[in-house]
Image (cartoon, rainbow, N blue to C red; front, side, top):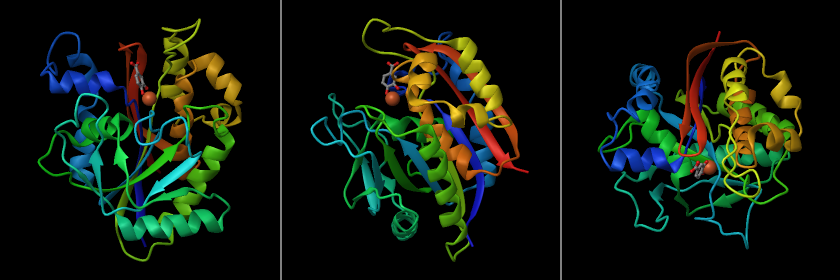
Length: 279
Ligand code: DHB
Ligand code: FE
């Protein structure tokens, strides 16, 4: 049986990738942000997961606004970094856990989640950045991946409650997989930000800090909030945080928060990470 060994929630802001590309990791501006991820990197190196299921949203790169799947699942053998306008970044391709992903597709559909199934897919910063934050910049990634893409771009986005339920399905799928892989789930996006409209530039560090503190021990409030609540509290793009609920829903009801980190602003965005383990 495969085993869920941990859940990570993390930002995926593209300025993080740009900072790494420009060699700014240790500047006064960025060092406190990146240093906050060292414990999670050490945990990942020691725990050595075999598969990372990465929940993220595409940002008009693999899917444009003419065709936006509410939910999509990658079942490919590999995923290349996509060109977001300046050429693909020099990060290695991601090797897919294709057999496990097909099992996940089957379990999702059996439990009434019907994703767009992608045999070919390129992945944007929504997946690249979390992988770099947790696994560094290896010559080859130490884990296979399963990308799960959620529409948080074009309204109506799915409900927080549905994301939580998807996490439950994911957990059951992991535990009904016959071989012994160690799986980590990464929920990405947020924290508070709004990139457009009258509230462009809005962030809410007080609510971000509460989220980081409470998503492990007290997630009920966040599961019960409406989509509109997310936009109001965290901003229109801060609603990406619903993707952390997939990760949280996959974990036990009682969890241990191993590490947490908050930093604001990164670009125009509250940024940070939690790492959870089942008790
Ligand atoms: C920014 C944040 C995001 O989540 C994103 O996907 C793109 C840009 C930003 O704050 O710049
Ligand atoms: Fe985003």
